[in-house]
Amino acid sequence: MDMKTKSEKPGGKAHSRTKKEWELKPELPDSHLVSTELFTSEKIFKEEVANIWHKVWLPICHESELPEVLDYRTSGIAGNVPIVVVRGADNKIRTFLNICSHRNNIIVRSPAGSLKNAEPSGNPNHMTCMYHGWQFDATGSCVEIPREKAGYQDRICKESLGLRQIKTEVAFGGMVWINMDDSAGPLRDFIGGALDQMLEQLDTEPLEIFHYQKSRVQCNYKLFFDTSREFYHDYLHFHNRQTSMTKSGYFDQEYTQFKNGHSVSGFTTVDYTSHQGTSTRTLTMPGLPPNGWRHSTIFPAAAYNIRTSCVRVNIIMPISDRETLIEVRGFGLKRDTAEERSSREIDYCSVWGPFGWNLHEDLLCAQVQTQAIKEGSGALWNVIAREEGNKVHDEVGVRACYEEWSRLMNRSTVNP
Ligand SMILES: [Fe+2]
Image (cartoon, rainbow, N blue to C red; front, top):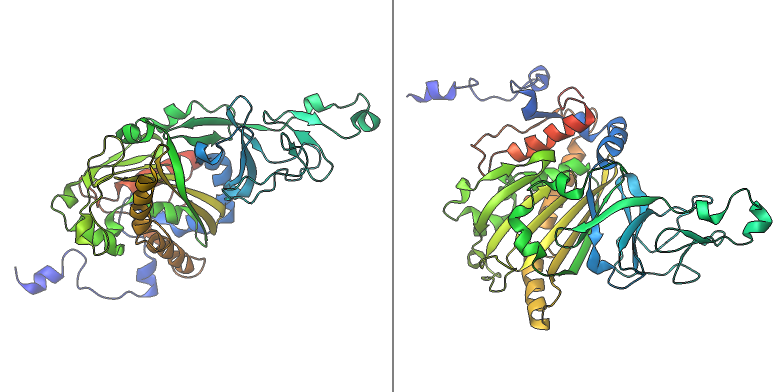
Protein backbone atom coordinates (compact mmCIF):
# COMPACT_ATOMS: atom_id res chain seq x y z
CA MET A 1 0.00 0.00 0.00
CA ASP A 2 1.50 3.37 -0.94
CA MET A 3 1.44 6.22 1.57
CA LYS A 4 -1.11 8.27 -0.40
CA THR A 5 -3.82 5.59 -0.25
CA LYS A 6 -3.09 4.94 3.42
CA SER A 7 -3.52 8.60 4.41
CA GLU A 8 -6.88 8.79 2.65
CA LYS A 9 -8.43 6.01 4.78
CA PRO A 10 -10.93 6.24 6.40
CA GLY A 11 -11.48 10.01 6.64
CA GLY A 12 -9.27 11.42 3.87
CA LYS A 13 -6.15 13.48 4.40
CA ALA A 14 -5.64 14.57 8.00
CA HIS A 15 -6.58 18.23 8.39
CA SER A 16 -7.84 20.76 10.90
CA ARG A 17 -11.56 21.60 10.64
CA THR A 18 -13.68 24.64 9.93
CA LYS A 19 -16.38 25.63 12.43
CA LYS A 20 -18.97 23.90 10.26
CA GLU A 21 -16.92 20.69 10.09
CA TRP A 22 -16.20 20.81 13.85
CA GLU A 23 -19.91 21.08 14.62
CA LEU A 24 -20.93 18.09 12.46
CA LYS A 25 -22.11 15.22 14.66
CA PRO A 26 -19.51 12.43 14.40
CA GLU A 27 -20.72 9.40 12.46
CA LEU A 28 -21.05 7.18 15.49
CA PRO A 29 -24.01 5.47 17.16
CA ASP A 30 -25.76 7.56 19.85
CA SER A 31 -24.42 5.15 22.50
CA HIS A 32 -20.87 6.31 21.64
CA LEU A 33 -21.41 10.05 22.11
CA VAL A 34 -22.30 12.23 25.09
CA SER A 35 -23.52 15.79 24.56
CA THR A 36 -21.65 18.30 26.70
CA GLU A 37 -25.06 19.60 27.77
CA LEU A 38 -25.04 16.74 30.30
CA PHE A 39 -22.27 18.58 32.15
CA THR A 40 -23.54 22.15 31.98
CA SER A 41 -27.32 22.12 32.39
CA GLU A 42 -28.77 23.10 35.76
CA LYS A 43 -32.13 21.68 34.65
CA ILE A 44 -30.58 18.28 33.92
CA PHE A 45 -28.76 18.36 37.26
CA LYS A 46 -32.02 18.91 39.16
CA GLU A 47 -33.55 15.95 37.34
CA GLU A 48 -30.49 13.82 38.10
CA VAL A 49 -30.88 14.50 41.82
CA ALA A 50 -34.54 13.43 41.73
CA ASN A 51 -34.32 10.52 39.27
CA ILE A 52 -30.89 9.08 40.10
CA TRP A 53 -29.42 10.32 43.39
CA HIS A 54 -32.66 10.05 45.38
CA LYS A 55 -33.49 6.63 43.92
CA VAL A 56 -30.33 4.49 44.14
CA TRP A 57 -28.21 3.10 46.98
CA LEU A 58 -25.24 5.31 47.89
CA PRO A 59 -22.32 4.55 50.22
CA ILE A 60 -21.98 7.44 52.65
CA CYS A 61 -19.34 6.54 55.27
CA HIS A 62 -17.84 3.55 57.11
CA GLU A 63 -19.03 1.86 60.30
CA SER A 64 -15.59 2.41 61.89
CA GLU A 65 -16.19 6.16 61.69
CA LEU A 66 -18.89 5.61 64.35
CA PRO A 67 -17.15 3.11 66.64
CA GLU A 68 -19.03 3.84 69.88
CA VAL A 69 -22.71 3.79 70.81
CA LEU A 70 -24.26 7.26 70.21
CA ASP A 71 -21.45 8.34 67.85
CA TYR A 72 -22.74 10.22 64.88
CA ARG A 73 -21.34 11.59 61.66
CA THR A 74 -22.72 14.23 59.39
CA SER A 75 -22.56 14.25 55.64
CA GLY A 76 -24.32 15.67 52.63
CA ILE A 77 -25.84 13.89 49.69
CA ALA A 78 -26.49 15.11 46.18
CA GLY A 79 -27.15 18.82 46.15
CA ASN A 80 -25.73 18.99 49.70
CA VAL A 81 -28.85 17.62 51.43
CA PRO A 82 -27.73 17.38 55.09
CA ILE A 83 -27.88 13.95 56.69
CA VAL A 84 -26.64 12.47 59.93
CA VAL A 85 -25.61 8.86 60.54
CA VAL A 86 -25.99 7.67 64.16
CA ARG A 87 -25.09 4.50 66.04
CA GLY A 88 -27.94 3.77 68.45
CA ALA A 89 -27.82 2.31 71.96
CA ASP A 90 -28.77 -0.98 70.27
CA ASN A 91 -25.60 -0.65 68.11
CA LYS A 92 -27.73 -0.30 65.00
CA ILE A 93 -26.65 2.38 62.55
CA ARG A 94 -29.46 4.64 61.32
CA THR A 95 -29.52 7.68 59.05
CA PHE A 96 -31.77 10.75 59.22
CA LEU A 97 -32.24 13.98 57.40
CA ASN A 98 -30.21 16.33 59.59
CA ILE A 99 -33.10 18.78 59.61
CA CYS A 100 -35.13 19.81 62.66
CA SER A 101 -38.87 19.07 62.56
CA HIS A 102 -39.56 22.55 63.92
CA ARG A 103 -38.05 25.24 61.66
CA ASN A 104 -35.67 23.19 59.51
CA ASN A 105 -32.46 24.20 61.23
CA ILE A 106 -29.52 21.83 60.74
CA ILE A 107 -29.36 19.88 64.01
CA VAL A 108 -25.95 18.23 64.30
CA ARG A 109 -23.37 20.74 63.24
CA SER A 110 -20.07 18.86 63.13
CA PRO A 111 -18.39 19.67 59.82
CA ALA A 112 -19.21 17.33 56.95
CA GLY A 113 -16.23 15.10 56.29
CA SER A 114 -14.81 15.44 59.79
CA LEU A 115 -13.73 12.19 61.38
CA LYS A 116 -14.16 13.69 64.85
CA ASN A 117 -17.66 13.38 66.22
CA ALA A 118 -18.27 16.88 67.54
CA GLU A 119 -21.19 16.94 69.97
CA PRO A 120 -24.07 19.39 69.57
CA SER A 121 -24.98 21.51 72.55
CA GLY A 122 -27.12 19.87 75.21
CA ASN A 123 -27.45 16.31 76.37
CA PRO A 124 -24.81 14.23 74.60
CA ASN A 125 -27.26 11.31 74.51
CA HIS A 126 -29.50 13.36 72.25
CA MET A 127 -29.15 15.39 69.07
CA THR A 128 -30.19 18.86 70.13
CA CYS A 129 -31.20 21.61 67.77
CA MET A 130 -29.42 24.76 68.96
CA TYR A 131 -32.20 27.05 67.69
CA HIS A 132 -35.03 26.20 70.15
CA GLY A 133 -33.63 23.23 72.01
CA TRP A 134 -35.71 20.45 70.46
CA GLN A 135 -34.04 17.09 71.15
CA PHE A 136 -33.99 13.83 69.21
CA ASP A 137 -32.60 10.47 70.29
CA ALA A 138 -30.49 8.06 68.24
CA THR A 139 -33.62 6.37 66.83
CA GLY A 140 -34.80 9.72 65.44
CA SER A 141 -37.64 10.11 67.96
CA CYS A 142 -38.34 13.60 69.21
CA VAL A 143 -37.85 13.30 72.99
CA GLU A 144 -37.94 16.90 74.22
CA ILE A 145 -39.71 20.06 73.17
CA PRO A 146 -39.13 22.93 75.61
CA ARG A 147 -42.46 24.16 77.09
CA GLU A 148 -44.35 21.75 74.84
CA LYS A 149 -47.77 21.82 76.53
CA ALA A 150 -47.65 25.58 77.16
CA GLY A 151 -47.27 26.36 73.49
CA TYR A 152 -48.87 23.50 71.57
CA GLN A 153 -51.45 22.26 74.13
CA ASP A 154 -52.85 19.04 72.56
CA ARG A 155 -52.64 20.24 68.95
CA ILE A 156 -49.26 18.70 68.15
CA CYS A 157 -46.94 16.57 70.28
CA LYS A 158 -43.36 15.32 70.19
CA GLU A 159 -44.53 11.75 69.51
CA SER A 160 -45.51 12.79 65.98
CA LEU A 161 -42.50 15.03 65.27
CA GLY A 162 -39.66 12.52 64.80
CA LEU A 163 -36.89 12.95 62.25
CA ARG A 164 -37.20 11.73 58.67
CA GLN A 165 -35.43 8.34 58.67
CA ILE A 166 -33.52 7.25 55.56
CA LYS A 167 -33.17 3.59 54.54
CA THR A 168 -29.75 2.36 55.72
CA GLU A 169 -27.77 -0.86 55.33
CA VAL A 170 -24.23 -1.68 56.44
CA ALA A 171 -22.53 -4.04 53.99
CA PHE A 172 -19.66 -4.72 51.57
CA GLY A 173 -16.73 -4.11 53.89
CA GLY A 174 -18.74 -2.27 56.54
CA MET A 175 -19.72 0.69 54.37
CA VAL A 176 -22.88 2.51 55.44
CA TRP A 177 -25.23 2.67 52.43
CA ILE A 178 -28.33 4.82 52.24
CA ASN A 179 -31.29 5.14 49.90
CA MET A 180 -33.58 8.18 49.93
CA ASP A 181 -36.36 6.17 48.28
CA ASP A 182 -38.45 4.42 50.97
CA SER A 183 -39.74 1.96 48.36
CA ALA A 184 -36.27 0.90 47.12
CA GLY A 185 -35.43 -2.83 47.08
CA PRO A 186 -32.59 -4.34 49.15
CA LEU A 187 -29.01 -3.11 48.62
CA ARG A 188 -27.85 -6.58 47.53
CA ASP A 189 -30.33 -6.60 44.65
CA PHE A 190 -29.00 -3.22 43.52
CA ILE A 191 -25.34 -4.31 43.63
CA GLY A 192 -26.03 -7.62 41.86
CA GLY A 193 -22.70 -9.43 41.47
CA ALA A 194 -20.57 -6.33 41.01
CA LEU A 195 -18.68 -6.73 44.30
CA ASP A 196 -18.59 -10.55 44.37
CA GLN A 197 -15.00 -10.58 43.14
CA MET A 198 -13.79 -8.82 46.30
CA LEU A 199 -16.11 -10.21 49.00
CA GLU A 200 -13.30 -12.27 50.52
CA GLN A 201 -11.17 -9.15 50.95
CA LEU A 202 -14.08 -7.00 52.19
CA ASP A 203 -15.97 -9.33 54.50
CA THR A 204 -13.64 -11.98 55.94
CA GLU A 205 -12.92 -9.75 58.92
CA PRO A 206 -13.79 -6.16 59.93
CA LEU A 207 -12.11 -3.30 58.13
CA GLU A 208 -11.06 -0.04 59.75
CA ILE A 209 -10.55 3.37 58.17
CA PHE A 210 -7.03 4.80 58.39
CA HIS A 211 -7.07 7.55 55.81
CA TYR A 212 -9.61 10.15 54.78
CA GLN A 213 -9.21 12.90 52.24
CA LYS A 214 -11.79 15.09 50.58
CA SER A 215 -11.49 17.40 47.60
CA ARG A 216 -14.06 19.94 46.53
CA VAL A 217 -13.57 19.98 42.80
CA GLN A 218 -14.89 22.36 40.15
CA CYS A 219 -16.29 19.69 37.82
CA ASN A 220 -19.51 17.91 36.98
CA TYR A 221 -19.61 14.64 38.96
CA LYS A 222 -19.89 12.56 35.80
CA LEU A 223 -16.55 13.81 34.52
CA PHE A 224 -14.81 12.50 37.64
CA PHE A 225 -16.76 9.23 37.62
CA ASP A 226 -15.64 8.75 33.98
CA THR A 227 -12.05 8.50 35.28
CA SER A 228 -13.13 5.44 37.28
CA ARG A 229 -14.95 3.90 34.32
CA GLU A 230 -12.16 3.44 31.79
CA PHE A 231 -8.50 2.45 31.93
CA TYR A 232 -7.47 3.94 28.57
CA HIS A 233 -6.42 6.96 30.62
CA ASP A 234 -3.69 4.90 32.33
CA TYR A 235 -1.56 6.97 29.94
CA LEU A 236 -2.24 9.89 32.31
CA HIS A 237 -0.71 8.10 35.28
CA PHE A 238 3.08 7.84 35.30
CA HIS A 239 2.88 5.29 38.11
CA ASN A 240 0.42 3.09 36.19
CA ARG A 241 2.41 3.36 32.96
CA GLN A 242 5.44 1.96 34.76
CA THR A 243 3.83 -0.63 37.02
CA SER A 244 0.89 -1.89 34.95
CA MET A 245 0.94 -0.96 31.27
CA THR A 246 4.40 -2.45 30.69
CA LYS A 247 3.33 -5.85 32.06
CA SER A 248 2.60 -8.59 29.55
CA GLY A 249 -1.11 -9.37 29.40
CA TYR A 250 -2.11 -5.83 30.40
CA PHE A 251 -4.19 -5.24 27.24
CA ASP A 252 -5.95 -8.61 27.61
CA GLN A 253 -7.60 -7.86 30.96
CA GLU A 254 -11.35 -8.44 30.85
CA TYR A 255 -13.74 -5.59 31.63
CA THR A 256 -17.22 -6.78 32.62
CA GLN A 257 -20.49 -4.86 32.91
CA PHE A 258 -23.24 -5.60 35.46
CA LYS A 259 -26.88 -4.55 35.77
CA ASN A 260 -27.71 -1.10 37.18
CA GLY A 261 -24.61 0.44 35.59
CA HIS A 262 -21.88 -1.25 37.65
CA SER A 263 -18.51 -2.35 36.20
CA VAL A 264 -15.79 -4.83 37.16
CA SER A 265 -12.26 -5.12 35.80
CA GLY A 266 -10.57 -8.51 36.01
CA PHE A 267 -8.02 -9.54 38.60
CA THR A 268 -4.43 -8.65 37.81
CA THR A 269 -1.13 -8.03 39.56
CA VAL A 270 0.93 -4.85 39.62
CA ASP A 271 4.72 -4.68 39.31
CA TYR A 272 5.54 -2.07 41.96
CA THR A 273 9.29 -2.72 41.72
CA SER A 274 9.41 -1.06 38.30
CA HIS A 275 8.58 2.32 39.84
CA GLN A 276 11.33 4.05 41.78
CA GLY A 277 10.27 4.62 45.38
CA THR A 278 7.69 1.85 45.60
CA SER A 279 8.37 -1.79 46.35
CA THR A 280 6.69 -5.18 46.26
CA ARG A 281 3.78 -5.37 48.64
CA THR A 282 4.25 -8.21 51.06
CA LEU A 283 1.21 -7.51 53.22
CA THR A 284 -2.13 -8.44 51.61
CA MET A 285 -5.87 -8.46 52.28
CA PRO A 286 -7.58 -11.83 52.94
CA GLY A 287 -7.42 -14.09 49.88
CA LEU A 288 -5.50 -11.65 47.68
CA PRO A 289 -2.09 -12.73 46.31
CA PRO A 290 0.88 -10.34 46.76
CA ASN A 291 0.61 -7.29 44.46
CA GLY A 292 -2.94 -8.28 43.46
CA TRP A 293 -5.38 -5.63 42.23
CA ARG A 294 -9.17 -5.64 41.96
CA HIS A 295 -11.48 -2.80 40.91
CA SER A 296 -15.29 -2.42 40.88
CA THR A 297 -17.34 0.69 40.30
CA ILE A 298 -20.88 1.15 41.57
CA PHE A 299 -23.12 3.52 39.62
CA PRO A 300 -23.46 6.45 40.10
CA ALA A 301 -21.11 7.30 42.93
CA ALA A 302 -18.55 4.79 44.11
CA ALA A 303 -15.35 2.97 43.24
CA TYR A 304 -13.86 0.11 45.27
CA ASN A 305 -10.19 -0.34 44.51
CA ILE A 306 -8.05 -2.96 46.25
CA ARG A 307 -4.29 -2.77 45.85
CA THR A 308 -3.08 -5.80 47.81
CA SER A 309 -2.52 -4.32 51.27
CA CYS A 310 -5.28 -1.74 51.34
CA VAL A 311 -8.83 -1.08 50.25
CA ARG A 312 -9.72 2.32 48.85
CA VAL A 313 -13.32 3.50 48.46
CA ASN A 314 -14.05 6.68 46.52
CA ILE A 315 -17.39 8.41 46.95
CA ILE A 316 -18.31 11.00 44.36
CA MET A 317 -21.00 13.40 45.55
CA PRO A 318 -22.37 16.22 43.40
CA ILE A 319 -22.87 19.59 45.06
CA SER A 320 -24.16 21.29 41.92
CA ASP A 321 -23.89 20.77 38.15
CA ARG A 322 -20.39 22.29 38.29
CA GLU A 323 -19.09 21.27 41.72
CA THR A 324 -18.34 17.86 43.21
CA LEU A 325 -17.11 16.52 46.53
CA ILE A 326 -14.66 13.64 46.11
CA GLU A 327 -14.16 11.63 49.31
CA VAL A 328 -11.39 9.06 49.42
CA ARG A 329 -11.04 6.53 52.21
CA GLY A 330 -8.28 4.00 52.92
CA PHE A 331 -8.95 0.82 54.90
CA GLY A 332 -6.89 -1.87 56.60
CA LEU A 333 -7.95 -4.68 58.91
CA LYS A 334 -9.28 -3.69 62.31
CA ARG A 335 -6.93 -6.18 63.98
CA ASP A 336 -3.76 -4.78 62.35
CA THR A 337 -0.64 -4.52 64.47
CA ALA A 338 1.05 -1.10 64.50
CA GLU A 339 3.64 -2.38 62.00
CA GLU A 340 1.01 -3.76 59.65
CA ARG A 341 -1.01 -0.54 59.75
CA SER A 342 2.09 1.54 59.04
CA SER A 343 2.95 -0.68 56.08
CA ARG A 344 -0.57 -0.31 54.66
CA GLU A 345 -0.44 3.46 55.08
CA ILE A 346 2.82 3.71 53.16
CA ASP A 347 1.46 1.51 50.35
CA TYR A 348 -1.79 3.44 50.24
CA CYS A 349 -0.31 6.94 50.30
CA SER A 350 2.26 6.19 47.59
CA VAL A 351 -0.62 5.89 45.12
CA TRP A 352 -3.66 7.63 46.62
CA GLY A 353 -2.41 10.02 49.29
CA PRO A 354 -2.06 13.78 48.86
CA PHE A 355 1.55 13.29 47.73
CA GLY A 356 0.84 10.01 45.93
CA TRP A 357 0.81 9.42 42.21
CA ASN A 358 -2.71 8.86 40.96
CA LEU A 359 -5.49 10.78 42.67
CA HIS A 360 -4.45 14.36 41.91
CA GLU A 361 -3.88 13.48 38.25
CA ASP A 362 -7.51 12.32 37.91
CA LEU A 363 -8.75 15.41 39.78
CA LEU A 364 -6.72 17.70 37.54
CA CYS A 365 -8.12 16.23 34.32
CA ALA A 366 -11.77 16.38 35.44
CA GLN A 367 -11.29 19.98 36.53
CA VAL A 368 -9.45 21.09 33.38
CA GLN A 369 -12.09 19.39 31.19
CA THR A 370 -14.69 21.50 32.99
CA GLN A 371 -12.86 24.69 32.02
CA ALA A 372 -13.37 23.75 28.36
CA ILE A 373 -16.82 22.22 28.62
CA LYS A 374 -19.08 25.23 29.01
CA GLU A 375 -21.90 26.70 27.02
CA GLY A 376 -20.60 28.48 23.94
CA SER A 377 -17.01 27.23 24.25
CA GLY A 378 -17.41 24.99 21.20
CA ALA A 379 -17.07 21.74 23.17
CA LEU A 380 -19.95 19.63 21.86
CA TRP A 381 -19.32 15.90 22.28
CA ASN A 382 -17.48 13.51 24.53
CA VAL A 383 -16.54 10.55 22.33
CA ILE A 384 -16.73 7.16 24.07
CA ALA A 385 -16.22 4.93 21.04
CA ARG A 386 -13.32 2.55 21.79
CA GLU A 387 -14.34 -1.07 21.16
CA GLU A 388 -11.74 -3.68 22.03
CA GLY A 389 -13.76 -6.82 22.79
CA ASN A 390 -14.51 -5.79 26.40
CA LYS A 391 -10.83 -5.63 27.25
CA VAL A 392 -9.22 -3.09 29.55
CA HIS A 393 -9.01 -0.17 27.08
CA ASP A 394 -12.53 -0.67 25.73
CA GLU A 395 -14.73 2.30 26.71
CA VAL A 396 -17.62 -0.10 27.31
CA GLY A 397 -17.64 0.83 31.02
CA VAL A 398 -18.26 4.51 30.25
CA ARG A 399 -20.94 3.57 27.70
CA ALA A 400 -22.68 1.31 30.24
CA CYS A 401 -22.72 4.17 32.71
CA TYR A 402 -24.41 6.58 30.27
CA GLU A 403 -26.81 3.84 29.14
CA GLU A 404 -27.94 3.56 32.77
CA TRP A 405 -28.10 7.35 33.02
CA SER A 406 -30.37 7.36 29.93
CA ARG A 407 -32.62 4.69 31.40
CA LEU A 408 -33.10 6.47 34.74
CA MET A 409 -33.41 9.94 33.22
CA ASN A 410 -35.52 8.85 30.26
CA ARG A 411 -33.33 11.10 28.12
CA SER A 412 -30.91 10.57 25.24
CA THR A 413 -27.24 11.40 25.86
CA VAL A 414 -27.00 12.89 22.36
CA ASN A 415 -30.13 15.10 22.32
CA PRO A 416 -30.86 15.45 26.04
FE1 LIG B 1 -7.10 7.64 36.79
